[in-house]
Image 1 (cartoon, rainbow, N blue to C red):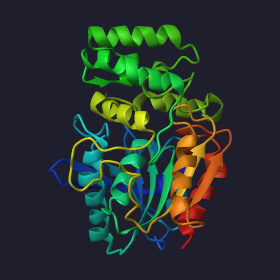
Image 2 (tube, rainbow, N blue to C red):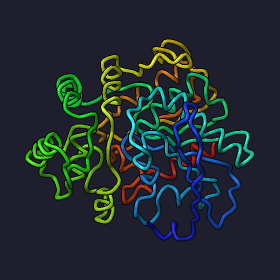
Image 3 (cartoon, helix red, strand yellow):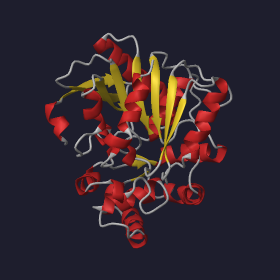
Image 4 (cartoon, helix red, strand yellow):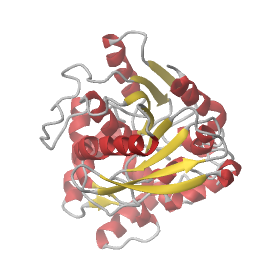
Length: 346
């Protein structure tokens, strides 16, 4: 952890999702009174809340806590700290995120909550917001992808051609296969990745690039990561179910989010009607993102801006990709002030 983390205290607050799945929140407090109210940080697929607490001099949790925010980290059903399950974005949108926000309100007494959301935490959270399930949320900072889904051509090909074959062999992919492959399928996939990815000596980093995008690497630039962070990655990525990739395959084909479970709380198509939220959204787009192209956020912003001009915002981040936005060595200088300004705006 960075030096700021040494003065922070963390308490795990369990909560039960709407369908009974056990999730939790990590409440982080520091020496400064949280005068700015609660902010919820929501991780992506196949990681955990700890993804916001990289071993850098000042991570996002440090940064916000030191500036008076009451920081809450959500471990939703995609978290590798929770029992593995074949989740969908629909389940997270309807069952997890609304319950997390209500739990924060119950513990803090706050009328409103702000949120910083990433990747599939962002897509599922935005699904909940535009469906009217998060009226308490007033400000959303969304990174990488939200309602629109543009991916590199190679990623699209993998979803169309490889997913049906892989789904016959395994119910999940796991970047930890780079360290220990536990089946013949895992061994074959890991061997193929090691043969085709030569960008570094971290096998989990290589597996992450294969699993989530296109590039060498796909989710960050090595130049943006310290050696400590690059080593830390080995323990921060694990199983992700193919149920998620199956849904994303349909979303990528349409170019935007669609629901798959038929839950009455969600529309079938998330762009077919105006969003049922008053939240102001700040869209972050790393220009070097090879998981979801920056066009994903540009198109989502354009959609929101057409409906309510000059209310939302878009920030294109040069020299950043997918996750180095949060744990790059200079993110506290380049990115966190943007997040803080957006959270501070009324």
